Length: 94
Image (cartoon, rainbow, N blue to C red; front, side, top):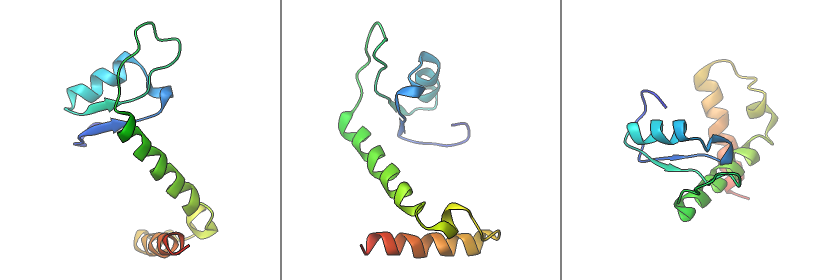
């Protein structure tokens, strides 16, 4: 998270620790992390914003179905980015 400015830090339950939440707040971001079941005092989090994380993960998962993007055959950054654009268009046109 260092060096990045964000309004919210969205993560899954694996990142639910007081240190991560404090680091997010120290950067000026809201920690949107659902609490683990074993947490003694559950924290509140924005459930609607957390749902957006799911959409991003689904999109990345669809992108990984394109072998050229998943294995990064293109070593040059501009060529790889071009294939990411093509794969994104293919996913969105479905």
